[in-house]
Length: 185
Image (cartoon, rainbow, N blue to C red; front, side, top):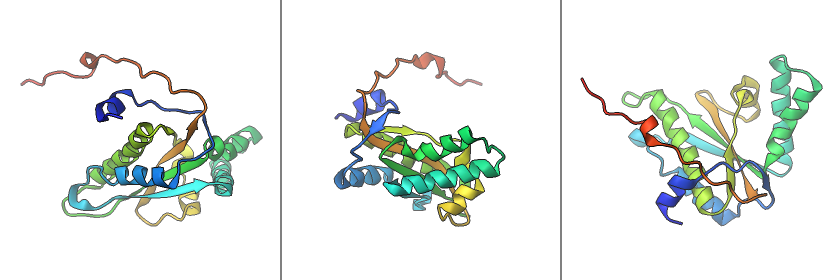
């Protein structure tokens, strides 16, 4: 697939089924992630793969986080438990923010976001369905603890990956004129 085709036509694919990406496809996904812009070559990211029964364990962590934040209705807990079951593979993108004399943490966070986007682009290029869904529970201290995050680390994305249940929708055409203007003094 041509690079510009991927950039211009990638869309989120929310309905995902087995099989998950193969080991070879995953290697491409993570190699693409490592090509994200990275001022200072800090590699301010890491990735956790969650699949199989581990998805249910992640669901329990999310449900407990929902309970701790005060949303203990059975419907909310069931929704949280089911989140990781939306796809056969969940990639948790973790930003590893560190003090650096030249690279502010905001740049590091953006770099980790670019790594996540590169995974989505590489997935689309390989015919893998993918969607970025995070939500407020991703930022809960209980989730960080449950995932084993260290000081200075934070979840920035849950990327759901699998086989598209339906063909991807067509990317909407958006006018660049609505978002681009010349700056003048």
